[in-house]
Length: 439
Image 1 (cartoon, one colour):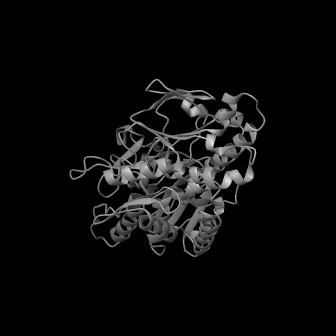
Image 2 (image 1 turned 135 degrees about the horizontal axis):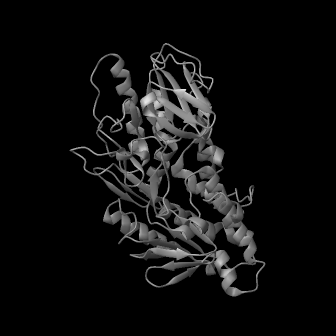
Image 3 (image 1 turned 90 degrees about the horizontal axis):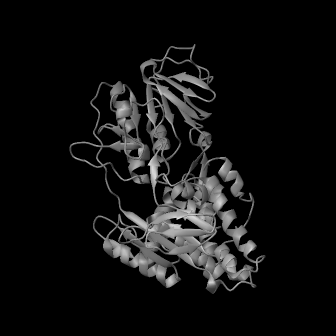
């Protein structure tokens, strides 16, 4: 039990209950927090944002389909009625396992159990120019920046005489043919075909090109070949130019160089080609594996550390049964968070923990109106049925009744009117700021 007061600088009250600190309010973090017994543990959640983000719909914020508050939920609201639960807005700096101490930018705090659910960040694979000029989309601020940049570039295209420069303001290059890249390409195509022509009568949007560049042999490499074929067919029907077996080797503020030797000209380069874990300082180096993920056993316990666990994208669970870590997707995070909470509840009753077994509930991707692909264990769907399935599942997974209602209304209006009404440059994107932040 935690009895230390001298290291409690976060103003968390002392308690006879074991203190559990969880870092991160993503899918794994909130599922863990909801399932952990608030009668038997003191829960402290730390995050650099005060809200949970439903990341699968971030691309709709970036493409003017949804406002960010409709896919976000205040973390304090999620745990508002749970006893012995606390939240602190901060940046975690490091953990000192030998002292059971966590250091943050607002102070330090001891723990009895530490749960690392820090998620993932964009992986630029060491390419500095990509990091400098490409737009990521892993958070609400990044999605808003991307929305602003797309609209700003279209506005700017009206103010230049040079045809090549004007075209670069209109064209968009998406790197990465996974679900995020495919869904983003589909949403941008709908904007191009149905929405933007109503706003900009001076522009012939038939000249606007949307490219998706994938280094693999097919789109949606984690799904079935049939899903990949249909996704490519849907995108090409929308006019998207699909580049397969090609990678991006370099870029500047107007050119994207391809491994094939070709060059694409764009002022809007979107990077969805890779992610990496967000391991924290102080974890034993031997426990941090490729992709900056933390090695854990089948109980999510960090190798070489006492009472430290990792769940979600940051965790690399390697066991005798699974030689490769689980995919970095929401369902893995949700299931790991729930089971770890159950196991800690069991541990206080001196009962054995249950090993994690991932249950693959299926994979879906939408490619615009009435077009989606879905792979489930016993059935594979394409087209309108898959699209309605995608809508239902994502609507039900949103946190909070208000968010579900707002998103449903927005989707219904967009379907009926062919309009994405949130085409607002609320916070103009300035690349100079991005460079100064070293993003």
